[in-house]
Image 1 (cartoon, rainbow, N blue to C red):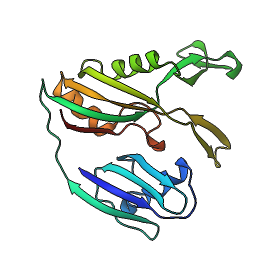
Image 2 (tube, rainbow, N blue to C red):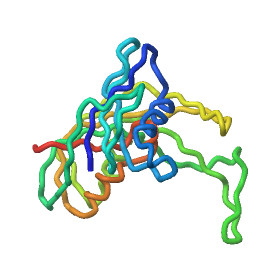
Image 3 (cartoon, one colour):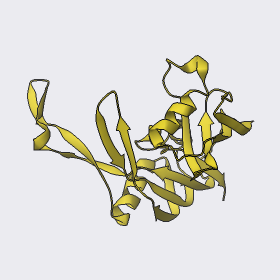
Image 4 (tube, helix red, strand yellow):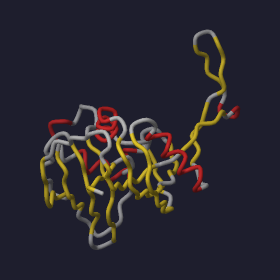
Length: 204
């Protein structure tokens, strides 16, 4: 795996959807493959560009508008009882039934369609993270920082919306090493295409 610091150059602020498109371009041979990278925006200012931290299975290649500033290769190894500091930008949500969306039939049964809604209450956000860690890790400490919503528009699908990201910082203890490894590689929670899910770790 590779951990890279990336700069998207430009004098204007770009959307989360545009950021994802720029990062795809760093992997020209992976254009038709499933996304195998996670990222988190670290800073974004008009005139200075957008700095990101990216974790990927393949080596990213600098393009005309997006530069790989630094990179290191690593092989994550975890063990039960390991204590780690972590940072995670995530999109805590819950799924509810929405009769206004209509119904769908599955296995001969009719169900109301569902919709995702953000969790706004901090206690609910903490419980969401605890469920995501489940049996793979236990939380020792946690700080929750609310962030501004991200708005997006998908032109092809003629659909727009927003996500409500939250930044989690804390200390965890690994309880199931293999499953924790899978979560680390695949990311945690939805909205990975918008910069959520990357779990950054350091020794506690």
